[in-house]
Length: 171
View 1: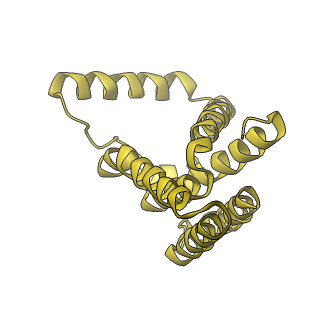
View 2: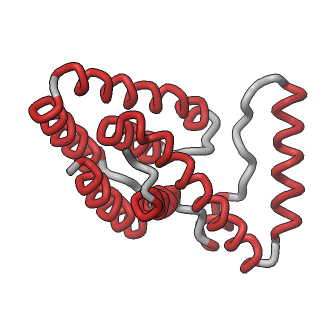
């Protein structure tokens, strides 16, 4: 049931993200509340608490990426929703989503024929972060990136969720 709730949430998140470039708070909040009520009622209070810990942990782990403007707030909310709905299976979810996002990003770069230019920029960015010993905001041209269309993390989350379900990676 939790996987179904997450799947429906991710489908709506992709639709909202595609149309409005944002993921609404209400969508993630309702999904987290429904998932928490379901887990608490059918799996016990302790399991509900453990799933809450997973949600907070995922949110805190990826919060520095939000500060560095690498991830948006909606992406963090979706990660927390996955954490509360999947618990320890969120690790499998993250693995599959990471693979899907990497393939999606490389495909976009190859289609736009700027793969080597962007990879050079990325490595310069990484070297700058290492030299300054802090996570810097990623340099990008907002107008150009909006016209070309950026990488939608919600697409990777949905593809990763489907991939994990098909491959049987969830317990």
